[in-house]
Length: 466
Image (cartoon, rainbow, N blue to C red):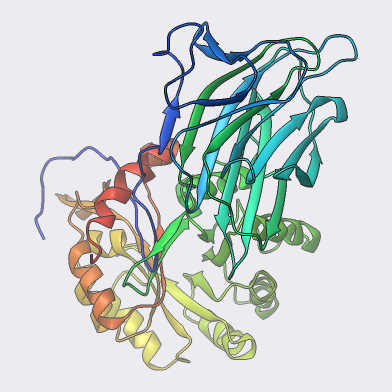
């Protein structure tokens, strides 16, 4: 370990695993019509009906004739895929337009706005398979997103959402369906019915892989997020963030999921997590007490949420007597967290002495940043715990010398003094089956978590075996 005298500038942090998110891929197709001559359509467009043409840097479908019109464009669609666009039109009296976007050709799937019915609708070919309420605004841009993904064996999920420009994108998909009918071959599409006699405008077409598309790697550990990283966001914003960045395994703090909240609140939040494909795999760092009933509620909460391990840092060694009884009763693990040398558990020797005489379901949450700040090598510490590490907080810190000893300062993953490469090698060798939970102590990173996550992910992915 190198001890630095100067303060390095914090930057970014992230982690990954058994289900590893793809590198942020370039769009499969993008079109804003800025390079197309007025009155023309881009060269890759095939107009199926209507007089589509570019006008004022948008693709426009005139208000006449009053019929169903469409166009297909871009590359052939394959695999998990998503299309988005923004579309604008107007009503005229009691007459309304209708419009939408689609994937996989004429017999594929489409998401349409039906202002006259105050709905958005999912279609397979010409058959509507689902509908949901939507409050369309005449004369405003409407944003549409349609996603087609493989789900369980021989099934596909269809999901869509719509929102008015300058309003917040919905956190969850507003409309969804599943099908056993495989997507047909074909291209993306635009649709429009100018029944109001007003033009329909299209802009900002984008086709890409869904953000939550994962590929399996040869590793057995998984990507996660310690939501202390998102301490400036509320629960719903945290759900949206995890979805946006393709993170499904969450270690939640009490701001986002309080184990002592009313059961209806917990039930509602669990339903939101389930609906978005997210898992509260653990909670922490959880408060514990010498009062057994207080600790019991923590385990009842964990059982209800499906949590398999609870992160703890008891203020008194006597609390382990209560926790051990609950571990045995509920068959739920606990993992002891370390907060540097000022913590009761900052020295791994102390933690190992506790584990030696306790139920094997009592283990360790290895905070890589804090173990580094305490002057230890994370890879060696992991190995010496001999299989008792049940969770990992992945962060990096630079270590400096002050009048009070060693000081750890938050750094980008790979930019500090933590032996992350060595730790990953140890995890692979031991076939670690836990979760690497992203976490940062830096208030700078926490204020801009999106950039922090995006920047660090690419570094960490480069460490994984090809």
